Length: 341
Image (cartoon, rainbow, N blue to C red):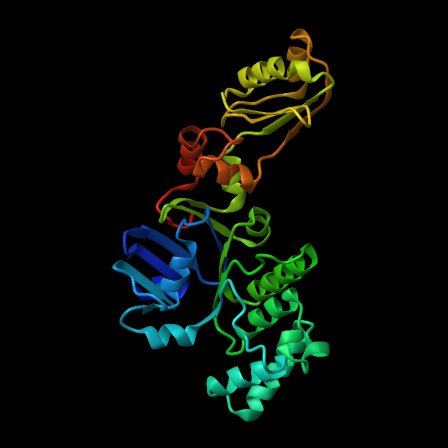
């Protein structure tokens, strides 16, 4: 890798493979995270997201391929990699038997900050993250959201240029999740590079400059959220007065949207589909076709696609078109192989 590439790329994985017994967790994963950006690593359970983070954090060694962090090889230069990163895993790793303030001061001393510098760093982080009021309480008395925040703060004690966050908001209430989102955005705005794994599509949409969709241990699409969403057709939803007309409405919607994948909800009396890329569905035409078919619609809506639609299309979920059709369109528009667009 050239010096120029090293200066603009915070993290890179090239053809990384990792096997645990009979399980192939990573199958030639490619990943590039430009310096100073937030990269969202998305994928279903078991896709390989956490394994990728563990490889980059030098917690497990890759079987094949290369992984670089801040220009350092994770296998040959693990100590240099660890000095460059902060890591917040899926479960809080702070000591529950001491106070929040003591947790941070202890970490500072372990990282050779010195007593005075460790105290100053701990106090500043506690203040920045709204934990000063609870700083001198035992961590075991913290709520789940407060522990997660403290764990995130702990990963910042050394002010790392690169931060790995592995599903940082899993299990949190909406208010705690929103607060962590704000923290992550502030860190990124301050120049910290963030690699974020998440199953919350809204989280990635809100925070990520680039999204990498991973499935079965490999990157299947990469690009800015807006570009990935632009490759998926519009989502169309129709709510009916008469549930007996759902089947007829589904036929009309499938024909206009150019897809055979229409979701019918008998409880909500709705039919919904995502149109194929390039197929434009206009509300007046949809209403006319429904009327001609004898379908009375209480509500008809067109909205832009979400990352949920992209995710479902690429990973074979329902309600977003077949993976082979919509997924191929996304890959064609955004590029595959894990390279940042």
